[in-house]
Each structure stands twice: as C-alpha cells, then as structure tokens.
Image (cartoon, rainbow over the protein chains, first blue to last red):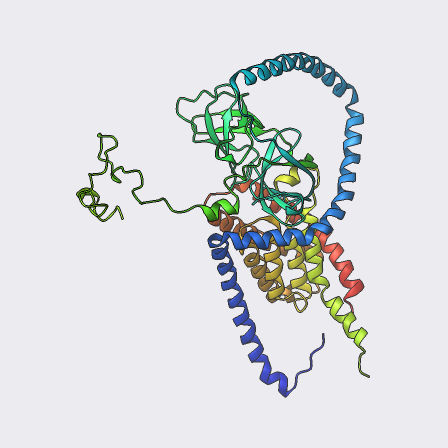
Amino acid sequence: MAQHGGPQQRIFSPLRTALHRFAFILLIFSAFGLMLLGKADTVLIERIRAASADLVSPVMNIVSRPAASINELTDKIYNLAHLYEENERLRRENQQLLAWQQAARNLSHENARLRDLASYTSPPALHLVTSRVIADMGGAYAHSLMISAGSRDGVAKGQAVISDEGLIGRVAEAGYQASRVLLITDINSRVPVVIENSRDRAFLSGDNTNRPLLTFLTADAAVAPGDRILTSGHGGAFPPGIPIGIVSSVSENAVRVAPMFRRHQLEYLRVADYGLQGILSNERIRQSHPANTENTTELSPELPDGVGIVPASPADGGNETVTPGAAGEAQ
Amino acid sequence: MKPGVWHRLDIIARGLLPAFSVFVLLLINLLPISVPLLSTASPALALMAVFYWSVNRPDLLTAVTAFLLGLLQDLLMGLPLGVSSLVLLLVQTGSASQGRFFHNKPFSVMWWGFALVAIPALLVQWLLSSALLGALLPIKATLISYVLTAVLFPVVAWVLARAQNGLLRYV
C-alpha cells in the first residue's frame, strides 16, 4: 500500500491522474454507447445475453438447490400449521372437481364424435420440456426468470412457458443449457389473449406490476371482474386455450388481470414447443421482407376513397405504363 | 529477497477478492427465494459491495472493474444494457474520491453515507431504464428496493469487512 515519493513519482503522478480522468470519460461514453447498441442491435445482444446465462447456469443450478430445500422446509411448516383448513378446502374442491370431471368426460366424447363428423384437423401436438427455475431476476426493472433448459433440450426463443397454473411467459433468449424467461408481467411482454366467456380478443400487456393490463380491447367488449383470460393462439406464438389469469379490476381506462401463478413459488416450469416457431423466432425475422410494393395482384396500388378496389388500368404496351395517379409509386 | 511465483500469484488472487465478492453477490441476487416481497423488488447487493470496496480499497476495485460488473449485471438480469455499468461506475468514482472522509469514523457514518449515495444511484437506474424502455416503470418497486438496500447494508458490509480483515490485510 505504502508508496514512496520520488522523482519518478513526481513526473508520472500528474500523467496518471490525467489518464484516470480520460479513462473515466471514456467509460461514461461507452456506457451510453452500450445503451444505444442495446436499442439498435438486438440479435447480437441476445446472443451475448444467452451466453452469459450459460456462463452462470452451472453455478446457479447447484446453489439454487439448497435455496429450494429451504423453501420446502418453510412450506412444510406452513402446511403443518394450516393442515385442517387446507383439508377442508381440498374436500370441497374435490367435490366440485368430481362434478366437473363428469362434465368433461361427456364433453370430450361428444367433441370426439363431432370432430369425426366434421373431419376437423387437430392443431399440432405440443412438445413439452420440463425444467427447473434456477434464478429469479427479481427486481424493480425486469420481471424474468432463468430456467435450466436451453437449445440442447429443444428450447427456442419465443416458445410459451407454462406452470401448473397456466401461462407464465415466453422464452426471451435461449442459451445452450439455460434460457431466460420473460414473465407476462414484464413491461416488454405482449400476449394475444381472448376472454373465455365473451370470446373478445385483446392483448395482455405487462407493466412491471403484478397486475398486467388488457389492451386493444374493443369498445363493446364485455368484460367483468372474475372473467378468465386464455391465450388466443393468434400469431402462432402460443398454443391457444392456455389459462393466463382472472380479470381483477375493470375501470374506465384500465382492465387489470391477476395472473394465475405466484412468482415466488415457481419451481418447475414447462416450455411448450408448439411447432409453429412463433412470430418471434429469428428465422422468421430474417425471412420477413419489407412490404412487397410490386403490383402483383393486378390491382391499382393506390385505392381511391369510396370506390373500393379498382383494377389496374389496362396496360397498353405491356407492363410499362402505370396509372397516372400512381405514377412514381408503383415501381 | 525476491518474492516467488506462488507468492505473487497469491497476491493477485487476493487482489481479485473485491471484484469476486461483487460477482458472488450478483449471483445471490439471482437466487429464487420464495418470499413474495423479494420477487417484486430485491436489494441492490452489487451496489452495496461496490460502495464498500470503493470506500475501503479503491485500489482493488477500479472504475473499469465496476463498469464490467455493471455490464454483467445488465446481461444476467435482462436489464437495458449499459445502465448498471453507468450507475456502478459513478458510485465507484464518487465514493473512491470521498473515501478518506469515512476512514477512522464509526460504521454508522458509512451507513448514512451509503443510504445517501443509494438514492441518486437507484433514481438514475430507474430514470434511464424507464427512458430506454419507453415507458415509466412503477416507482413503488424502486422505493421498496431502496429501503431493502439501505436496511441490509450493515449485513453485507459486515461480511465484506470480515473478508477484508482475513484476506486483504497484507495486500
């Protein structure tokens, strides 16, 4: 620690402070540069994030086990204390479920017969990967988890992640042996949903609170507290019909949904490969092209108001002439 | 007497302790703990350690290290990139320059100092994250996070002080 002042020290000391100051300014600029990069190039950042998840996953995989066993212990103590009430509740629930089981059996037979009659094509079968939660990025700024399954197990970006209760989120980045799951409560999460009873469509948008919002709901949609919310399957990102939550409050400007899962109790999750790859996979993003402006449908590229679809003006000498109104735009 | 290779390696390894302790605290922050409160807002453990080391051993936790640890935090937690780097860098530089003030003072002074430093640190994090996400994040979670961070600081500082006394006395 002790530093001896000498002639060398006297020469290099101001130089060193100048260098330090320069390094500090450089680091500040690189922090802002990183922010810009994070906004601009998402594919590269995703790869790096996935790699960093892979990096810590072996450690987290081991250390999260004792944490889980401590949780089990506290759970056990809690359960012992509430044994009687829990038993009563389960008895009641069991009665109700038995009635539902009967209804479900009848319906599934009827459904099978109707499908035969209508030669209905079933949706693709679900391929499920079960994995353990190894990290919870609990915090005020992001709602996400890390799970111990990655591309090695067939997990890919955009796949739905389900717990026993219902949908909890989607895979944000898939590493080789670990992936990050973006919860439906995160501010970046948007899930196409449908209200179970009224079949009204909407989006479930997270806002980093425990009660995500229903957005893009039509004005005449019928929604009331207690309604169940399911995935709609639009966009091919999620299998349809997975329960998500229950409408908790309806007010003038916001409909909020209470998710089915309790975040602090998530332990094992299933990743559902729906076979459709979803709208979020990198292949889709790479394949997607800007809107095709070539006039392939033989319809005028500019549609006059109130007239409907107008056929392109008959070409006089091949394809070279364009409608006067659409000149310059068409090709 | 010339120090041997092993001796030099030993000193380098000990010198890495501050950065390593921040990394360990980052991982502890990631542990899935079944307490309802902690899943909505968690204490900023890395911030505590960066403050502690910049006050006590700024020579071992430099600005570059703080920057890189912040980058790691952003990558692991799925936060907007660069925000934690900036926050930890500012905390490191600010605390290291004021470190002399805390020397030979009772621990409560350092605690107060940290409680003061953590306010702008978390506010900057909240503001920049909100700006980068393009939506105002709920401030309530940040407030809870701040209270947890300020209250838990003595625990972390005690552990770090033990490590400092045990491993870094002659480094």
